[in-house]
Structure formats: structure tokens, C-alpha cells
Image 1 (tube, rainbow, N blue to C red):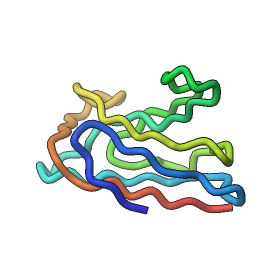
Image 2: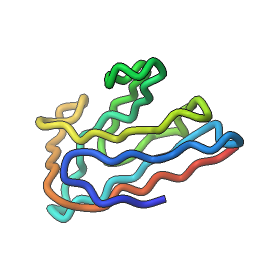
Image 3: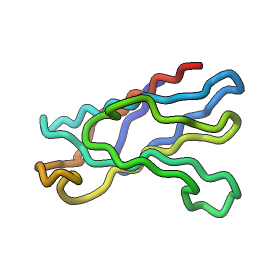
Length: 96
């Protein structure tokens, strides 16, 4: 699945899908800092979240039936490396 990003993108998780891997390609050429999360109780806040810098380092466990949201964040990545979020593409690959 792919979506274009200005701040965030939402992906539908099918019943058979258990993991997601995410890659963000920003037009700046720098990695983009983001949070991958799911909202289980419908309050608009992620109940699970994983911070990434450009891509997930390993597949992230997801709960089927709840959308995955990838929100880009301002500032450097957790390791202190430069990160920029301008315009680009988010690719989410779901697996069983």
C-alpha cells in the first residue's frame, strides 16, 4: 500500500495481516522521523506506537481490523541524526 504524505497517512489492516513494515521516502533525501500507531478505542490517540527514522528496522506487530496511522514528526531521529519531513511517499507492507 502507498500513500502520499504531508503530515500523516492511514492504512487499513485486513483480518489476515499481523505485521507491517514501513518505508518513508522524503523528497528532501533525508530520512523522515515518524510514529507508526493504532487507535483501538476510537479516541483519536494511538494506543500503540513505534517511532521510526525513514523505515522500520523490523516488522511491527499490528492488530487486525484497526487502521495503522503513520504520523511524521518534526525534529531529529531518536539517535540524533538529521530528519526532515517535507513531501514524499509512505509505503506500508503488511504480512501475516
